[in-house]
Length: 194
Image (cartoon, rainbow, N blue to C red):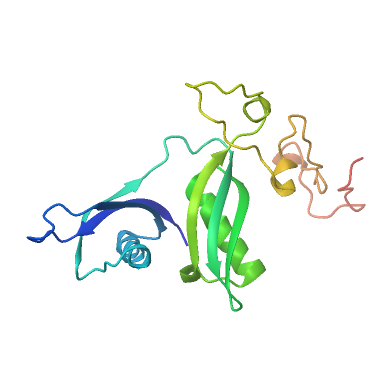
């Protein structure tokens, strides 16, 4: 699908009775700018009595991540409509970017719950710390902020081990150079090494 993160800012068109209307800002995940604007008006119409014909968009800007080479844990709070009703949900994913984690979330909900893209509303998407940041004892004072919660889901927790190992199940031995390559072999290759 290839989602991007957009920041859309909009408001009601100024009138004589209301010359400075309230400004609304949303972070929206969409494949392109046009869809981001459409989703903005869809969600804003639910929040306040405003629509595209009575409002104006002040700016649309794409939010890009600075460093997408590090794997992080992302926590996504969502609300989605199913055939039976509206459900709230919290899911965790591991990815190198927030957009990648949101794409995984859409695929996961489509597979597990048959939820469509249009019926899913992202409430919040944050980086969830792991390791020392998550296990640090918190002594609240007036100046300190409350630390974010640690990873909760077992599917993400299993990857947080610093000594994690993955088995090499199917290894095929290759010849050292082209000169030692054979078309036919005398015996079957042993691909499993214990």
